Length: 101
Image 1: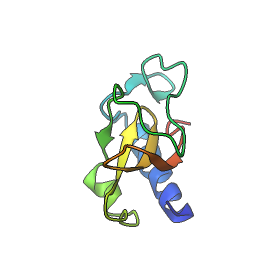
Image 2: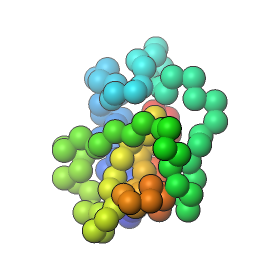
Image 3: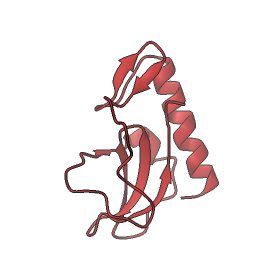
């Protein structure tokens, strides 16, 4: 993920949150959109995303602004983070954290 991609992700979600549009899996709070009680992040670069975690595809409007992922990779959102992961293994190769912050 390039710095331009990271900036595009933050800009997209900042605009969505400002208009009260919380993506699936995030609850609208008086200070933005937050994950429901996630005390500890269970994902790190170089590690697989645990099979029990639900991830969501990125909106088409955001995907169209990002560098296309390499073959076999996909961008996903988990709670308030965007991840680039290897589809077959779920290994995280890059991430943008704290979209609500």
